[in-house]
Each structure stands twice: as C-alpha cells, then as structure tokens.
Length: 565
Image 1 (cartoon, rainbow, N blue to C red):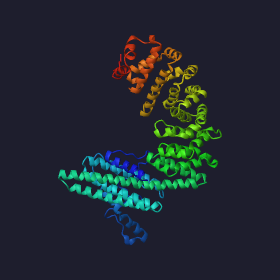
Image 2: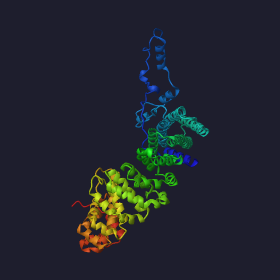
Image 3: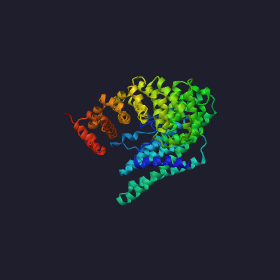
Image 4: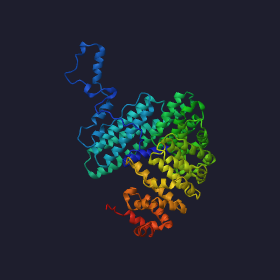
C-alpha cells in the first residue's frame, strides 16, 4: 500500500511542478456557473433591496422561503469572493468548478472532485512559476474549498472512515490552510529576495499537499474497489453483476494507477470467477473487456497467471458454443498479455502450455470473422504471439495462416483500416524468417499484396493513422527484404516494379511521411533486390542508394530536398 501511495502522490506532485494533468480520459469535465449556489439557487434569485415582501402579510411557509433566499453558506461565499471579475486571459477557466455528483455515488464523487482538485493543483503550479501571486492566492482559497467539499461529501455517502483516512484528511486540510495563509502573506511582501525564499516554501507546501491528496484519493478509491469486488464475488444475480462489472470497467479507463488498485484488490480473480460460470455467459464479453484493460499493468498479468487465466482464455477461444463477441474479447486479453511492448508479459510461462490451442483458435477466428473489429482483435493477438515465441511462426505455417491472412486482405468487411493491415504485415514479417514461407507467399500472390502495402496512405490524416501507415510501409519493406533471399520472390518483386516503388520511398520524404524507419527498411530491401537483379536500377540509383554504405545512403536520402520537376 505504501508503494501505491507513493505512486499516486508522485503523480499529483508532478502535476503541480510540471503542469501535466494525468487524470484518466473518462473523468467528466464538469462546469458550473460562477453565480450558482448549492441546491440549484442562483444569485439572480436573491431579491434586491425594495423587492422583499412584507413578511407579516404572508404565512409562515412563505416567510421561511423568503428568508431562505437571504441565507448564505460560508464556503460558497468564500469561493465567490475569491473570484475577481477580470479580463485576464485565463479568467474564463476559473469558472470550472465541480458539479455535484449523483446522490449516494461515492465513485463519481471521487472521480469528479479528483479531476477538479488535480486541475487546480496543476494551475496553481503554473501561476506560481509566473509569480502571479494574486492568482495563486485566490486559487489556493478555492482549492481549500474543493478539498473540504470532497472530504465532507465523501464522508456523507461512504461507509465509516478508517483511522488512516482520517489522519490523511487532517494532514490535507492542514496543508490547504497553510497554503492559503502563506500565499496571503506573499501578497503583502514587496522585497523580491524575501519573496523568492517564500516562493520555495509555497512550492514545497504545494508539493506536500499534492502527495496527501494522492494518498487520500488512493485510499478512498481502494475502499470503493474493494466494495465492487466483494459485490461481484457475492452476487448470483446477473443484473447486479453486470452493473458492478460495468463500474469496474469504467474505473480501468482512468489509467494505470486504478488498474493496479483493481488488480491488487482481487479484481482479476473476481472477473475470472464470472468467466467460469455458465449462468453468466452473457456477461463474458464485458468481463473479458475489463480484464484486458486491467492487464495493461504488471500486477494484472501476475494475477491472471495465478488463477490459471490463460487456460480459461484457451477454453473460451476453442469452444465454438461461445459467441463470436466473447471469443473476440478473449482474443483481446491474449493480445494484451502477449504485448511485446510490455516487458513483464515475456515471463508468462503458463502461456506456452496452451499456445498451440490458442493459435489454432485465433486463426479460425480470423477466417470466420464477421467484422473488421473481430478480425483486428484476433490478428493482433496472433501478431503479438509471433513476437512472444518463435514456435508460433511454425504453427502458423502448418495452419495455412498465410492463405487465411492474404485472402482476408481482399475482403473489405474484415480488412479495411491500416491498423488491421499493420497486424497482418507484422505476422508476415515475423514468419518470413522461415525458409518455407517464401513458396507460400508466391503461391497466394502475396508479393503483390506486400507491394500494395508499400503504398499505404492515411485517409483521415490523424496522427494515429499516419503512424499506422508508416508501420505498414516499414514492415512491408522488411518482409520483402527477408523474402528476397529466395530468388523466385526477388524476381517476382522486380517484375511487379517493387524496385521503382522502393526508390520512390527513399527519394521522396512525403511518400514515407519523412519516416526514418521506413527509409532504412526500404534501403535494405532495395539492396537485397539489387543483389539479385541489378539491371533493374539506373546508374544514379545504384551509385546513391546501393553502392555506398547504408549509413551514407541514409544520410543522403534523409537530407534530400524533394524535386517538383
């Protein structure tokens, strides 16, 4: 628990010092009108002098309602008084206040208040760096109000507070008060040397405050996660389990810290319990989707291995009685736990025992996929497995996976995005190290499809899609270079004008989106083809792209200006 505290505390400390907001993407950005008061009241509902009714002429209920309009709350007035009406460029952003979460919903309360407080911490750090002391003080007062509201509101809707939480709440509020007091003193100081020393004190207080806030938020979220996990374990009602699993999935979308909490508090165990009960079959997709999210952290993968999760995934993938959606979500979990980008997944020993069954089921799922999403999940799992263990490539060769994948490339219903083609060409690139692979590629007209991947272009121009297209081009060139060890493949590539396309990618930065990775792969493929069919190159291309050292050709092409002639 101490390690977790440090993690979240460091996160919020970094927000205050570096100006980065690490809150998850699902946190709702709730805005509230500056003039709004608790209970839906507004300042424009308060009567001005001369508008008040003659109270003696109305009944007691009307009189009470009239008096209610004049009542104020100290916290609310403090917030309003700390909001100067100014024309500063960031004045409008000061209107961001926490909207009240739903009654009795501690999770939403924590997430919304957490987003607001972390945003305030980040912005105070920014203003402090700019020496804007008036803004720092007003925002510190507002931060104190938000922290007090979170503590009081959570206490009202949660179970009895633990002693540890009570201590951290006390420390948090003490630091909030200290921050407000010291920033107020800074407003009265004119000596720059003194102000500089006080700035260090404010920065330290702000950092400590962020740590206390992170610890408190983690403790509170841990309690709520524990409650959700207990509810899943104890429930035999399908609707209750569905709702609780949905809440757990929402929490996984808030980022890695919450996924770690869920894994540590038994979330993986509870979800696999759901996936092993026939009465909950309709909830398998939701439970598996949640598991895939949790397994983005090391704790999640370790818990999956402890409960024989790989064996459960293999059973689901190989059981045709399960829906396609269920098997697709199981494939997503496999893709996550075999990701080459996560170093801890490489030690998943239990996976090797079930790998053949899983690979066979995934190839079948690719072949029978009814949509692009299902094919993407299954092919992504296969692509990651080819990195996970070299035996997978031999299995895929025996299962005629090359034919299945290349046939799918002509099916727009299954393969319609660069993300999917990225998975296919990854599998082909990893399989191309096998000598037997070349004959299968030629037989299935694979060289022409690889040639087409060298011309992959983004449709939308979004950064993610552009990056995917770069990966497709790079891996297509790598595949071509590896396969061209076989003279038959090299001759077929030359016949299809692959050399011309490779030269174009090398010489024209816009064709490869100025990607150095694509350039290196294309130079390597071009040199391999030139070794078999040198007559396909002009003298200038040979002298600049093939004859020099690879690094010299790379430097020449990477600095090359495009010719518009």
